[in-house]
Image: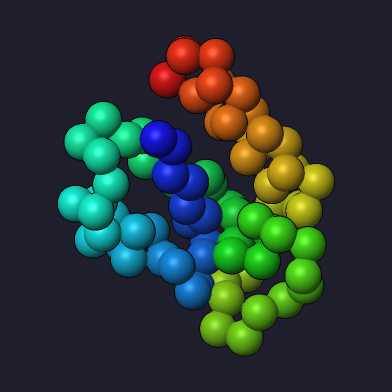
Length: 76
């Protein structure tokens, strides 16, 4: 299992995600993507309470895709 979080996510903060680590399988990979905010995991615009991203939406999508590809290829 792969769990991705954004360092600038104000809704599901990296600390929130880490605190729920025990609900995931022991061998799950938890990756925090630098500069990514909550809304960048979807295409639904800004969300109240979210953080301010430091990467563009295109950069965020590339980071997500790269991590998923790395995980799916068994390289993580």
